[in-house]
Amino acid sequence: MTLVQNFPFFSIMIAMLSGILSSVFTGKQARNVSILAIALTTAMSGAVLAYCLKAGESYTYMMGHFPAPWGNEIRVGVLEGLTALLFGIVMLLSVIGGMRHTFEDVEGGKINLFFIMIDLMLSSLLALIYTNDLFTAYVFVEINTIAGCGLIMIRQKGRNFEAAIRYMIMSQLGSGLFLIGLTLLYDVTGHLLMSPARAAVEQIEAAGTYEIPMLVILAVISVGLAIKSGLYPFHSWIPYTYGYATPTASAILSGLVSKGYIFLLIKIFYRVLGRENVIASRIVNVLFIFGLAGMIMGSVRAILEQDTRRMIAYSSVAQIGYIYLGIGLGTQAGMVAAIFHMFTHSATKALLFISAVGLYEVSGGKKDYLSLRGSGCRNPLAGVGFTVGALSMVGFPMLSGFISKLLFATTALESPHKMMPTIIGLAISTVLNAVYFLRLVITLYSKPSWTAGKIQGGELLEGESRRANHPLGAAICCFILLNLFLGLMSQPVVRAIAAGLAMFD
Image (cartoon, helix red, strand yellow):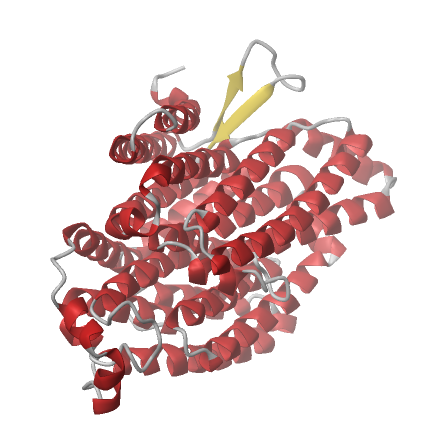
């Protein structure tokens, strides 16, 4: 086994070790350790991706001295390496971009706790991507939940406590259903490793037994992870969670956490239950309907919001609907489109939240439409960053969102019964996206009215005179480049996703 093949395991251990070290360091020391850990694991993920692309096949990494089916395994392929690389880049830029506000919003004695949560979040996401063991996946789902809750309530404000409680209640409901599904699956198959469980499922299918229990297992696992990822109508916690956390936490929670659960669900569909069985059960039709509803209802709620943080959060409900729409199409091309949009949303939503910080800085800290008039002129780089993110979500050519919607539209042609609902849903959602995103973009470059200036008073001047936030500017520039890369260089990414899915079977 080469050194590179050890990198997935090393990455998870480095992230967990950095959390331990951060617990005994000061705030700035913990920040440096976390940034170093994220950068190092991201570089390792890039090396793993390059290795898998060259090898053309996935491999398993045995942890400990016990082989399958008793031991624990990591399984790595092109899709795992690509996902880990993108998640690492988004997390690194989110931490750097929101650095100043992290130190402003979090009490000095709790800064290291914030970065402990970041480290735990990183380790859990990497474990969900790489693990080949279902119980290990459940353990890190819970670690992810605890870390997410900690990131929300670290600001110690009333709204944050409410958001954390909402997040914890819904997350525990999803985790409970997921655990029930895993328990039933273990009872039926006798395995927790994905590959042996898949072999047992194939034997059960061939024998024609346990049809109802297997349908229940599929439904419970799907609903559990759908709740945790915020699929409509299980989305009520999202506006509070994303809207009131620190900028870094909002970018990570919206861009990465829900995608980790979706990635785990896709792995279970392919590696445990079998894609053909999932399609035959028609559970994909249910996901398709909820995804279609989320695309439209999330956009409608975003239009009604005046607080831009909650508007961006409701936009996430719509975009998660896109992902489940692709999964619900029930085709390989639909899954490729769903995963590509998962990458698109991770990069773009983090860009929107981080760019919005720069706009709030020059608007007296206010987040409503009226107060943000002209903020794109007062902070040009943040204005450009938000505009790029907004245009990407609408589907402007050359940006990643355009490629996502193009993939969904072309993929729908392979599903005659779902083609028209998909095309109509895409059209309606795109128009609604344009309404609330372009309305805000126009607001950013509109001349502040006399009323807005009077309302903000001295706060507007104070916001304008703040010292330059260079880490924020650097993060915005890198996010813009990432979005352009996904838009202009989409074909290599799409081919890598397709190759990675082929390795899932």
